[in-house]
Amino acid sequence: MVDNDVQKNMDALVEELKSLSLAPRMRAQLAVAHTPNFWTILEYGKEGYEIRFSKMLRWLLDPTANHGLGDYVLRSMARFADAQLGSADAVSIGEQYVPDNRDGAETEALRKHIDVFAHERNARICVTVETKMGTDEHASMTANGEESQLKKYYDTVTGHAEYGTYAHSYFIFLTEDGHVPPSFPEDEAQRADWQRRWVFMSYADLRALLDTCMLRLADMDAMKIVSDFRTDVTRKIDMSDDDLFGVFDAYRAQVETLHDYFFGDDDDDAKASSDRDLQRAGIAFLGALGDRMPLDDAKFLLKMVYDHIHIGRQDHRVNKDVQKLVRRIFNHYAERQLDISDPSRFGTEPKDARTSPAKPAYAPRVVAMRMTNGKGQGLHFAEDREGQRTVYLSGSSNGVFPNDPIRAPRGSALKAPAKSDAATLLALPEDELAAFVDAWIDFSWAANIERDAQAARRADVATEVAESTGSTEA
Image 1: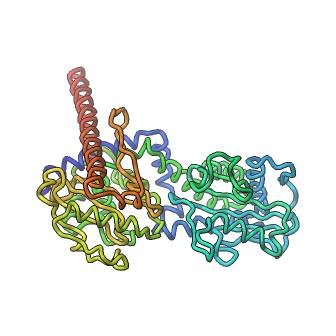
Image 2: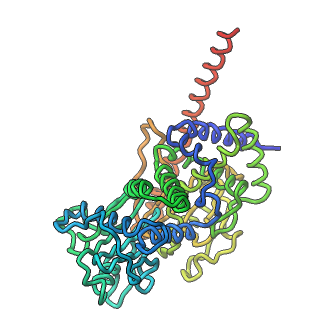
């Protein structure tokens, strides 16, 4: 027997998936989803995906690889950087590549510091690529304190006995949207010399480069490999669109449970739901789906929604301040208390210790609490004991809190509270910290209610249209 609230939530989720399927870009995604593709056939975790992504770039950038493009991709990447830098001595494209067994490309290059490093000796070109998928640059500890990851890579290449002498040396920071690293000053004039050498490339820029590659490929096998990669890059571009996927923040718990039901759990943490909950959610979803859209299409879109929600979760770095903050908040709301006296034990708490009824004073707004598995850097605030309606707040590895909160629905007058950072929040007295968290909980519930109301209005309109059409035909 499926609970009415569970069924209602699944009905609303299916309605949103149906709306998503009608978006032009999603229609294009569904059209290619039925074509076999290396990137969607293989099952891999987020960390494995990043490794494969880097190795694919390495293969393309390697002039000696068997794609048949020679140094075209390497020179094209250099030309992209030249255009951004305004280089007077830009690299040319179109020259015949003369093979040299000292040319090549590597991942985890130069003492495993660099994602992708490609080089061509005769042309004196080397390209350093740092790829980020939902995460950002981080710092590492040295004898002199913290050092920027990108500065470390820059110093490694420019200080190299051979590559440091190359006339054409480029540093590319590749992200989904081509943003400037957070550690860089917004004003370019205030950036250090080494920072001005970094160029920012988006997935859309990468896709444009792949399009030019496709026109030059003669080998059908290589063409299929590059085409599959281009399709996946396009999927990543579409998946990062908050206008398309932001509405699903309200269905995080349902999406995670359905992902376990249809695909199995590919995360490092334990399964999000019990077997009973999985079966109940699956039955409710299939009942809601009916003949409203093909099951394969619904599963494909669910996978995209899941990936969108979990963008950035491949960054497994621990932030001790976030861990301590999450446990302090948990203890404020929960009846069962966590031991926070020994930070070295953070992340080792057993599963049953991570859940608790909320203190009676917070009912019915919050009736149960759950800290996430693994590092324990996120919290679910449940409105009902079954956890079907939850607010999820988490902290990033950089200390931002909340890192990925729910957004106000489109067209809403709701305004989200300001974010903060774990260190600042830990310094607050208990009542001020509680007020900060309460504001986010209240906003999140209000956003959920507004989103439900919008869905109900859309359903009413659809019913009126259907009834009107039926009476006209009669």
